[in-house]
Amino acid sequence: MSETITSQQELRSLDRGLRITAGVGLALIVPTVIGSAVVALTSPRAGRCLTYGEQCSQVSGGQIAAALVAAVVFGILAAAWPSGRLPFTAARVCAVCLQAVAQLTLAGLILGYG
Image 1 (cartoon, rainbow, N blue to C red):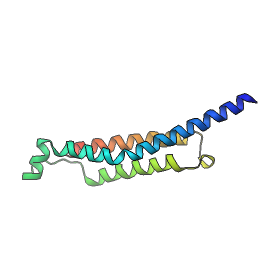
Image 2 (image 1 turned 90 degrees about the horizontal axis):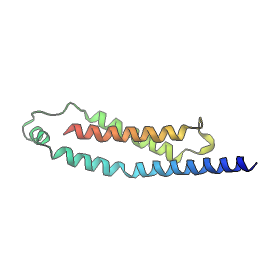
Image 3 (image 1 turned 30 degrees about the vertical axis):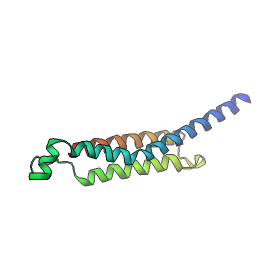
């Protein structure tokens, strides 16, 4: 009986930690975008693209927007989805991992844009 209680407490603790992680990821989206954009726009290639229209990136704004939307959606799902309504046990873990991948992809696409 005490093993069941302990495992339930561990699951609640893990769930809470994953929700906090998703919330932190959501809070870091704006600084990630701003920081990546500043670094990308200070490159010589970005200056040449903005000034002369040469050597511009092949990354489209749609790809950046899709990565941003994916990061936000997975973050919200991971942080706000009720525990009792999860489709499977590791759904929150998957959502947090997908949020992190989408956010890293977003940063990479922005850095590649410049």
